Image (cartoon, rainbow over all chains, first blue to last red; front, side, top):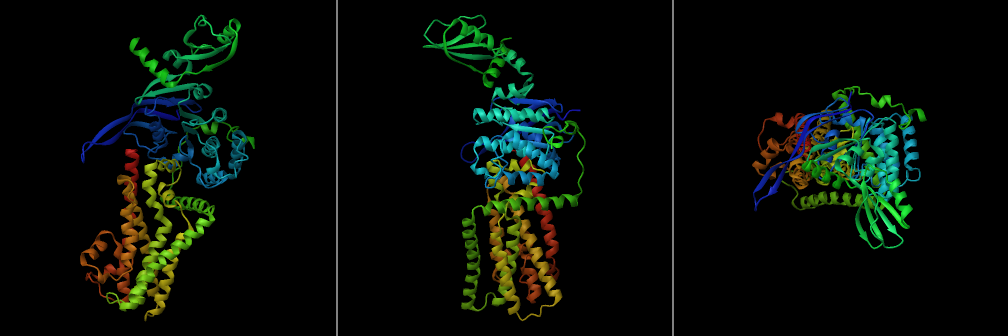
Length: 318
Length: 295
């Protein structure tokens, strides 16, 4: 049985815009339309798309905050909009841009409130807290007021708070937004462990690296519709996306010439080389290093917006 | 430890999709109160983390409410009577309305912050919790310093009871107790119903304050000094007259300026129950509208 089921779900908003001095015009905006997909227990799904594509709207409908305008939606067998408060015991939610922690109180107090609100049995709470503290390195932060935490520390606290009651599903809306590289890595590592332990994870993100390191399945949503549902290599293949190798040579020279690699830009001794995202960077790096004296090099991942843009371009041409 | 922890626990439990257990209405009501208490305790501790601020505002709010009454006393010193009512009788009005509003304010007054939560989008954070959103909103910024007003109301009430030439028999005391409870409930319902309009209008707490804080001031003065239209409005519209005016008319044996049947003077508990029902329906409609429109 599926844990999450959406069948032709749509959601419209009424937007009032001012026309002239007093008149206001009502306009229907479709945030999500004809959305159908299922998520099996234990899956980790990356839900991506440009700003305003309908990602947050979907998450809000899945948590029961928003009522769908049409279609059928089930989470753990119930209608989230009707059973919001009861379903809440089975789901964990993390909003990247909004904390659920208590600003003026130590982190520990927020966790304690979760224990009471979700009625977590004390032995299980202690075990879960110990595990979260260990994996998220929260030990030194437990007695610090939340207002004194850095963004990365607070996000780790929010993650723990969303998991102390052993939810079946964890929704994350941009969990790595604004975090530094190290914090991102920690969050991803933690989420991977959570998912491997059997928790179903659905996350929205702008960072393709999140998907690459966590999700076997990725769904692309744009203008309220699912435009891709499959694995990440498939998305890259369909979007013909490219990764970029930035090479700093010892001397200025002619553009690097390698099979399957395209020179995008040359600027002094720095060159940008594009190659298909599905290919491994290792042999290319080796080949470049073998033939050219190098100062430095780095690999840049494709950006979601570009992948999607190219997917459309490909679709119209093909 | 490992066998029950979230990372190492057998996934079977989290993968199963069994139905959620049902809850009785009584259990749900109890849970609403319990979750209010949990959230209120958190806010109280948060307020205590700024001790100096807590002390200053406590003293400030006590002073402000006391000045209200002082003005009334000074005025009466001058004129002796107001609308035919003596000072202890007006003390009874002031004490009861202050107490009812004060307790209602402590319990649910923070619901007026709803508009701000909607505007900033933080209402969503409450809606992911397994507790009624109303409980969470009402408990917001709960602090004990708000107890100043009801305590002061109680003091004035006590003094007035002693100063009045009334023999306080058990039935009369019972009536007074019923008045205080019903009055508190009515004010609480007005707080909630008034805040509910913010689901549609956005930040508009002043609208509700006109009926709550404004209402309490209104009820501290004898009904006879107001126009008949106003009296009818607070009897048949927003049911403020049932908070203390009507029951006190009965207790003091004074005539009703509107000349309503005596049943009205004892109807406060019934009106309180109806107000709660109305406020609950309004809240549900508002929340449904919010979740329907989003924003």
